[in-house]
Amino acid sequence: MTNVELIKEINRLKAEKNAIILVHNYQRGEVQQIADYLGDSLGLSQQAAESDADVIVFCGVRFMAESAAILAPDKTVLLPEPDAGCPLADTISVEELRKLKAEYPEAVVVCYVNTTAEVKAESDICCTSANATKVVDSLNGSKKAILIPDYNLGHYISTKTSRECILWPGNCPTHHRLTIEELIKAKHDYPQAVVLSHPECGADILALTDEILGTGGMVKFVAQSSSKQFIIVTEQDMATRLERENPDKEFIIPSRKLICPNMKLTTLESVYEALLYNQYKVTVDQPIRDKAYQALARMLAVTN
Ligand code: SF4
Image (cartoon, rainbow, N blue to C red; front, side, top):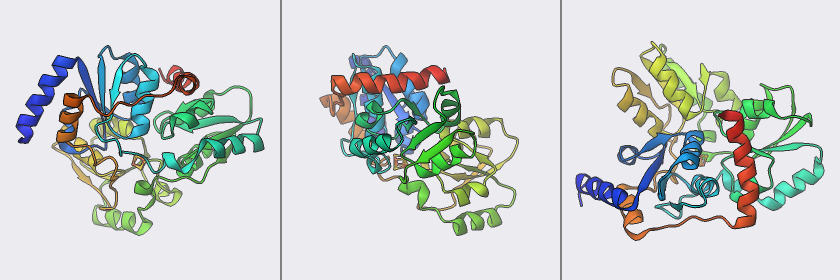
């Protein structure tokens, strides 16, 4: 089928099954265009929690679909590509987190949403890159916070809060592999460009950045900015969205390494097949779900 035919079939099946399609900002351009909601992890969680659809097709990676299944247990959540995982989420296991908690029993655990459901269930509260500092500052009680699993995000938050932060050495390979030389070259080639970087980048990259933002923050910043050129330091298809929504502005990606292979697995074909065959269902077992729900719901309460 051509893309036009696939989109027609996707829309037909969506109406037939009362489904919505939630799409992360890092998805391919053609998948972004079939979104009922296109956004960052925070916005996608909010949409999953509030939707009255029967079926949620999640175009992203597994931890995002799990969050949707936790927040909307009465709905069928489909992940079109069952192998779309997140290497950052895999950097910490529930056993490792329990060990860390035993070492710092007085600390609260703030877990980035890029974690498995089991790890969320062992945490006190979740955060996203959009609300991390706000979440950490909202905590009562302990002066210590364990921030997992992304070291770069954790380090960035630690510079914004007076709370003592215990960090975990996890990284997103997509953001972490950008070198400082690549950013310096892009800044040299485009001296007028505003640099927008995701906090999963290393501290050396963030030090050369004008604005440190999650992907939702980038969308808002660019729409409101009078600047015409931006260096986008995050997954490359973020620029695909920004170009579509801001045709009068120019977006530069400083390195072709800024690509997440897991995010690229989902295609129009796999979304079509997900709706046609009701695949691949993502569920979270009840005891894990109940505890993980608390951590996600606390985050949404702080953010909303
Ligand atoms: Fe995980 Fe990084 Fe890919 Fe996001 S971009 S899904 S954090 S590997």
